Image 1 (cartoon, rainbow, N blue to C red):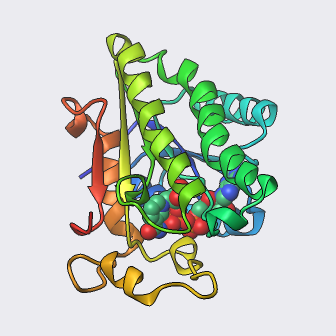
Image 2 (tube, protein in one colour):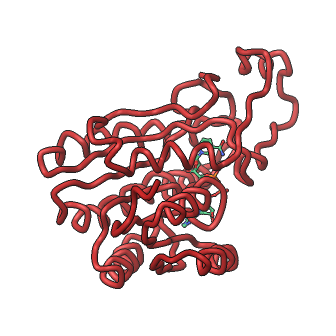
Length: 251
Ligand SMILES: NC(=O)c1ccc[n+]([C@@H]2O[C@H](COP(=O)([O-])OP(=O)(O)OC[C@H]3O[C@@H](n4cnc5c(N)ncnc54)[C@H](O)[C@@H]3O)[C@@H](O)[C@H]2O)c1
């Protein structure tokens, strides 16, 4: 299956986890890649892996919370590839705080990377996407936006806002050929998910209620990448303004 031949896809958070798996999936299907991440070492590692694929790829080390830098990077990458057909926006962070103990800097860090970062990336990619008759944009939200979870109030708020933001993009731009959807991962085995640790003194009984199926359900990043790739392809022609959960049924 070569759904991305002659297509240029921008992927943020591409150096690790779900973003990296998505980059490799698109490359396997012949797509060219514009890669953004703030981890230069891991981005270099991905570029080494991609050098074995018969595709074009370009990359930029960029902090997505920096509005002006994001514009410079996206414009440069898009110009180098000759345009953009799709965006998979994955870059994000997870932080775990008891709400009463969270300070303003901690709140603002999550908002500026997860939420303002989403605005920055989408805002600067959109002019490139809308040059095409049809384009595809997939923002990565989270199952935490649906399932209330203690200690994730700020993270969940950013992920809920990403859904609302993406639906708004859909209604504003579908007449220009834009497909704007979200994925809601849960339990994907990445460094981000593995970094989750409970604050001290948590209620263990409460934790059990967060696992309604009675067992831990995990999946490799490639399982999330296959859904994101579908949403970036013409297979998603009739999917717009919605969300797809990738959580094994957890929520
Ligand atoms: N893993 C899961 O189970 C899960 C569940 C729900 C949502 N998500 C979401 O999926 C997305 C990808 O997460 P992942 O699990 O692959 O995590 P990950 O930590 O493996 O990958 C995240 C990538 O984003 C990059 N990044 C972080 N902050 C950045 C910044 N300011 N600028 C540029 N790049 C930045 C990191 O360097 C990293 O390469 C995130 O938005 C996360 O919230 C993941």
